[in-house]
Image (cartoon, rainbow, N blue to C red; front, side, top):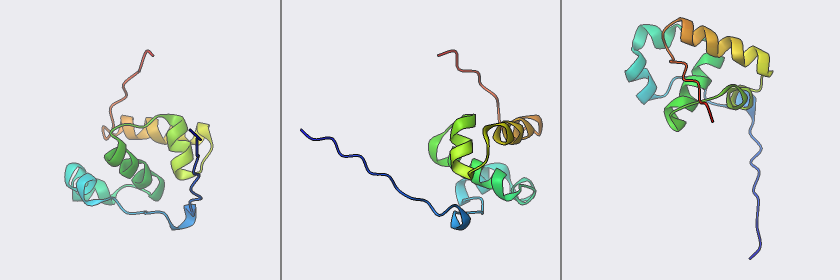
Length: 88
């Protein structure tokens, strides 16, 4: 059979910038409101996908890898995320 690949073109400027309901409930109002737009997008990605790595974060928020590493590290340092090193 034939293989078909579909690529969706996302309008990064208009992606959800709010914390979705599930993530909001988990984080609580005060913590959710303290997140910036990029952090919210990352939290929403995690809420939908259960995990994120730096490359996925870079694609989700359209920022360089190094910038995403800093954002994820900040979220870990704040106790919002847990860093789990995958040995695979």
